[in-house]
Length: 504
Image (tube, rainbow, N blue to C red; front, side, top):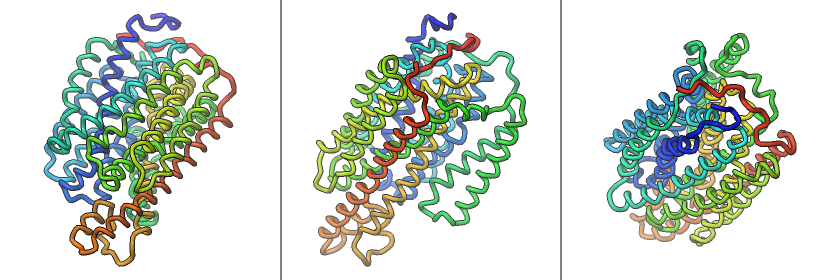
C-alpha cells in the first residue's frame, strides 16, 4: 500500500467503520430523549439519571488509552469486532433491566465496548488514508455521526412513545450486526509489527487514574467537592496518574508518549477540543428535559429537535473537509468554534415561552461550527502522532473529548441543578426540588399546583439559560486557545507517515 495513494479500498473501509461509529452515536443521542421515560419507569432521581448517562462516560474514558494500546498490539480490526460484540450484548441486557442500577451497570459495560471500538476505528483511518485525504475522511466520519445524531432521537422518540424506553437499547442490536458484517468483510487488519505485550501495571494505573478522575468530576456537584467519596476518587486519580507518568518517563516503550504534549499542534488542538466539549457534551441532556417537561413536547417531537443539529454538522463537515487546504487548520478551528458560540448564545436566550424556531437556530449553528472545526482538530491532533502509535494517539484524542464531556455533565449538570433549586419558590420539600420532573409531579397534588408548575418551568428555563451561557464562554475559550497555541497557515498534516501499519 502506497503512503501517498492509501489503501485501494479506503472509501469502502470508511463506510464499514462509520457503521461501527453509528451504533455508538445512536445510543448516546437516543438515550437523552428517553431520560424522562426512564426516570418515570424507575422513579429515578436526577442523580440516578445522570449516573445512567455517566456510567458509560466513566468507563469509556477510563479504558480508552488501554484500548488504544491493545489495538496497536493485537490488531485494530480485531479490537473493533470484540468491542461491537460487547456493546451489542450489553445493549440487549440493558433493554431487559429490572432496576435503574442494572441499567447503570449495563451502560458501564457498553462503555467497555465503545472504548474498544473508537480508538481502533480512527487508527484504521490513519493507516489506510494518505495525509492529504484525512480531513475529508474525518469530515465524512463526522457527517455520518451527525446522521446518527438525528436518527437516534427520532427513532428513539418514536419507540418511547409507541412502546417504552427499552426500545432505545434494542435498536442497537441490528445496527451492531450490520457493522460486524461490514468490518469483517472490508477492514484490513493493521497493527504495530514487533511491538511488545501490554504493560499490565501501567495499564492498571492509567485505567484506575482515569476512572477515579472522571468519577470525581461527575459526583462532585451531587455530593460536594469536599465529600469523602469525591476526595477519595480524586486522590486515587492523582496518585495513579502521577505513578503512571513516572513509569512512562522511565519506560523505553511507554503506553503514552508524554513528549507529544510538547507539540503545539497536539496539545493546543487537544485542549481546545476538550474545552468546547464541556458545553456540547451536555446540550441534549438539558434540552430534552426543557422540550418535554417545560414546553410539553412528546419524545418524538423532542427527537425532531436534533435534526437541525445534525443538519448543521453535515453542512459544516462539507466545508470542514475541504477548507483546511485553502485556509489552514487553525482558521477552520477558530471559525468553527466562533459559530458554535453563536449557537449557544441563541440557546442561552430561551425561556418558557420559546419554541422550535429558536431551538432549531441555536442547534443548527452549534452543529455547523462543530462540523467546520472537527475535521481540522482531529487531523491536527493525529497528524502530530507517529503512525506506529496511531491507536494510542486516537485513544488520547478520544480521552480528551470524554474528559470534556464528563466535566460538562458534572459541572454544567451541577450548575443547572443548583440554579434551578435556588430559583424555585421557598418551602418546597426536598424531594420536590430534585428535578423539574419531581417538582411537576409534586405540583399535581396541590390545589395551587398550576402556579407552582409555571414557576418551576420558569426556574428551569432560567437555569438552562445560565448553563448555556457557560457554553458560550467554553466555545470562545476553545477558539482563543486554538488561535494562540496552534501554528499559522499549515496543511492539515504536513508529514507523510513512513509506515501506517502492517496490512493483514
